[in-house]
Structures are given as structure tokens and as C-alpha cells.
Picture (cartoon, rainbow, N blue to C red):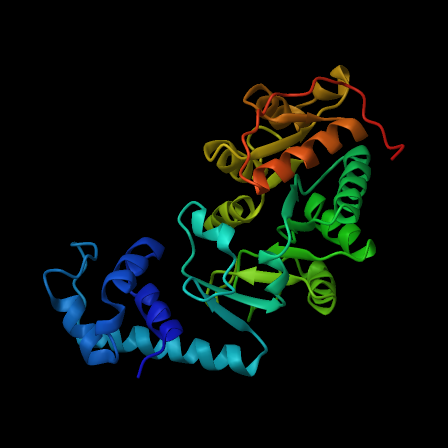
Length: 322
């Protein structure tokens, strides 16, 4: 009998079938699919709900299923866990994300995710020294306030946020743009990934274990960072930087977006053009302890589903005396 993980992975391995159609099929037909023959009958019918431009043969389904079983075996042999969107411990915030994932691979622990609140700290791979200092302190402070920290295990702001959380004895979670069976990119952050796992955090991927990094994957994983977060803090980004994908997703879903605001002369630099843009579009200005505490307060209100007003706090001076 085919279990749910095998079914989800078999469907997703078929060309043209993504999270949306996988979820439609399983939600409607799960009890009808116990083996490959029943799956083949369903996909061959006129009511299969799949993209009409694709026609799947028995051999297509067999190949997809063999790949799914191979990846499940690999995961079992290499301490990679699998969680399906129907499992009780699946991160419930991700069910409301853009294009919600149907299956996730992970190393580490996940029980804390549904018990705590997460804030993402993100930004450029090549930050200024001031931004490095801010990213570290904000991550440390939020960790001390009881949040887990979400980021993408990239160089720059991501790695600083993860490390600051670990140093503060907190839990941190990374979404990576590759399979967990491949070498971590960038390779310099392999030890950081190991630390995250060892200290009961999580390294997540929605890709099969053998998938290597690809440019679209970095954009796709940004929606998971924003989807799991009650709030996102942007430290430093250009207006065409990769950070903007996650930030725009937060604005799209009317979720809390905090943006570090510097003095006027600093903000005039191209490297902060994304910060300026996001502040104009509703980002909450973060510049001192008071503004960060207000952001934390609003995160708490969002967690309790209370009504919030996302009005920017205006200020220009970054302070570190907290």
C-alpha cells in the first residue's frame, strides 16, 4: 500500500504537477489511491484535475514512483526527515503561504515551530559593517525575547542572523534552495548548518534530496521564509536584491515587515534603495530599541489575531544601547 509521503512525492515528480494540483488530487481522492494501478486509473480519467496539456502513461507514473521510493530510502539512510502537509506536526503557518508546500524535507527538530513564534531576518549577501552589527544585535535581541529566527543560510545577513541566535542559545531555522542530500551552498556555511541541527534548530528544503541549487529555487524559498514568519526584518537590500522577494510577499499578505532605517545620507546610497522602497510601501521603520519593541508588540498582536495598525514609526538614528 502506498503511504502518503510516497503518493505526494510521486505526484510532484510528474511533469507539470506542482503543490496546487498535488493538494487538489489528494484532498479529493486520497482514499481511492492505495497502489499504482489506482493512481494510474485516476490520472487517466477525465476527472483527474491535472493540467490538460500533459498526458501521463503507466510508465511515466512508474518512473515517478520509483524516484519517490528512491528518495524516501535515501532520506531514511541519511537522517533526513520528511513531513507532509497532512501531518500534525507540519508547520501550520506554511499552510497559508504563497503556493503552500505539500512536502518538506528537514534535518533537526520541528516540534518547537508550532509552539513558538518566528521572525525572519534577511538582507544582502554583501552588507556594510554597520548592517552586520545591526543584524547581529537584532537577532540576538529577538532571540532573548523568545522568538526563533528564520533565514536562508546565505552569506552576509542570513549567516549573521543564524549565528547570533545560536550564540544567544536560541533556535534558528534555515530554508535552503537545494536538496538536503547535496553539499550546502555556500560551502563555507556547512558548519553553520551543522550547528543549527546540533542545537535543535531546523534546516528545511522542499526539494528532492539530490536537487542542486538553481536560481529559481532561491526565489521560491523566499516565500517560505515569509510564510512561516509572523514578521520579517529587512536589514539592508537594493531595490533589485533577492531580499525583495520575501519582503514583497509579506506586503502582499499584509503581514508585518520591519525595515531598518538609517540617517538620510546613508539611505541615499544605492545599497539601501530597497529599504527606502519598502518603507514607502508600508514597512515599519526600525532604528532603535523603542521601534524594535513596537515591532515585537505588533508581532504579538498578529499572533493573537488581534487587529493591528501597521503605521511606520519615523526615525533616523540607529542605536545599539539595548
